[in-house]
Image (cartoon, rainbow, N blue to C red; front, side, top):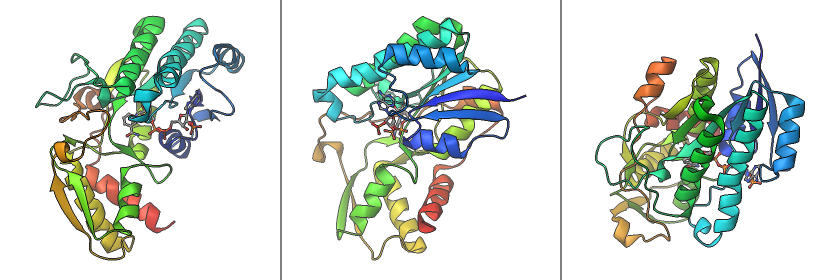
Length: 290
Ligand SMILES: NC(=O)c1ccc[n+]([C@@H]2O[C@H](COP(=O)([O-])OP(=O)(O)OC[C@H]3O[C@@H](n4cnc5c(N)ncnc54)[C@H](OP(=O)(O)O)[C@@H]3O)[C@@H](O)[C@H]2O)c1
């Protein structure tokens, strides 16, 4: 049986990977912001009613973490109102919604993996709007909502830490990278795969997904350098020095610890996941082959 899925935010990192990972039994209607602006409640209601998909995947979001501090109205319009428009249209048409959220809903003060039902306490505007977006989805859809939080996402498509590091490594002799923030990198291709597994199993509730293992941003950068050198993506050796968060202030505090527990999603889908280093190798091989 074919599952019809409406994808919003189709031109982002995750949206692009979801298009690439589409299973054969999925009919995917992939709409970028130009085709469907989720801030436009009428357009969302009309599209959902006319397309009548089985599921919506919301990969659209305002993701500029620091910029959100001075652009709260836009972040709120997209991450809260946009999510609510989709959830209301889904509820009105008997459609299921998979909504993607973030580790930034947590404050990062724990020292063991965050469980989906741990208390949220976002540090900045971006995290607060994503938390409020989750709530809006739960309010509109009750037990029919599927919310999947992820972290440290990257893909060959779009801008992300991996591509920024590679650019800087080809430009500088030394890089200083934060060592006292830990989490887990996530290849958006793996997240896309898991979202399809979750939809196939008709999951509802709140789940977490990242690749497996744990790293600091410094570890992540060292791995990018090592792989970049061996794949020919980095032209010469670069010194990578660990620094503290204090030495690299950002407008919004990043969670010091943002490892997410994947146990519930593993149990529900039967998929354990891929170690972040293996996933990074796969992505960087894609970059190598252009
Ligand atoms: N990237 C990460 O490290 C990370 C970490 C944790 C969670 N997440 C979550 O993962 C999800 C996917 O993120 P991503 O990395 O794929 O982000 P992304 O690459 O920034 O993609 C977001 C997409 O949403 C689109 N968009 C923005 N406003 C829209 C609107 N009003 N209507 C329709 N589309 C709109 C953007 O279009 P424009 O390009 O035109 O703006 C962009 O294509 C998001 O929910 C994000 O919060 C990401």
